Length: 359
Ligand code: NAD
Ligand code: UDP
Image: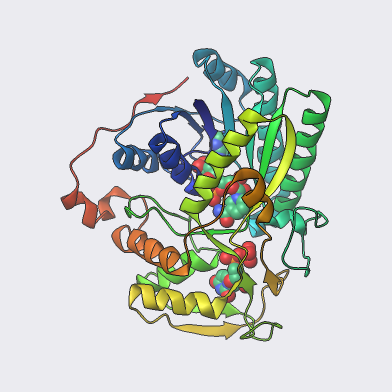
């Protein structure tokens, strides 16, 4: 199959590119690199030994996107990762979020419709369930989000549902990710957040590598095992594999459906800190601070629908999540900045940069 991947240079996209290439698929990446680096795609090529087309293009640019579809007549399906994803930023600049995420998806779907490419896998999020305290969360839990980022995901799901209803040739899977963490086991690709990380795992790993002094644990009086917040952390490679299963589904069925991608198990902040300390053999200094506004105590998935309907389930536990994160962080203390690539520079042969297609 030939799969067009929007946002393929990003954290989840790059790991999915690896799994698709290893599965023998042809991929085409479209990314504007607003939150990623081309180097991530060089690394994808290094891991897989395969090349692919990369377009430095913005989804909002319909003309450019049409040209990409014109140049690539054989696209069977699209995986749509491209979007802005920081909750706090979305509260500060909602227009940017609505414009990029909603308009980007509208333009993409219009062009897909025009070129009769009607198989789509969409990156949704557990944030579509809002601040529910009913766990485990099934796909039937009420939707409603508490911030502009989450609302873009809810709105996009509604738009996709309307598209699939209006034209029964469309086939769409919306994947609601829980908390993606971890990195590829090669240590070559991983999460590379700009500035101070918002999320727990990159923050812990930056403390471990000495970039930050201590972790602030937001709240210690939640009604949980140890008083700290509980989340469903899912290894990014398991998540990436879920996209291959979803692709099988969308190319075999019609209509739209949504699937939770999580492990079904909740881990507390303190449990994650301990798992990381064991994996990295390091102490993570932390102190407790006030709860973060808007945080729920507990959030984890019921992933049984993805199990029964996609034939997917998570295989990697907290040890692999932490070990793989640590390998990535230790080897790339400044992310994809080439100057700081320490270990693999010596160990792996030089690779040619991927071919760039600027339309
Ligand atoms: P990311 O920021 O690493 O990747 C997104 C990619 O999309 C980036 O490479 C960025 O440059 C690109 N992009 C953004 N806007 C674009 C545009 N208009 N045109 C072209 N490219 C554009 O994020 P990620 O963590 O890999 O997340 C991928 C998707 O999964 C996002 O839609 C995100 O909302 C969703 N998601 C992520 C998480 C998470 O915790 N990482 C959780 C749930 C859902
Ligand atoms: N968290 C924390 N310190 C941090 C970042 C996160 O204590 O620096 C906690 C947060 O309160 C939540 C859990 O870690 O209980 C996971 O937070 P994250 O932002 O990674 O995911 P989300 O809350 O969006 O599910």
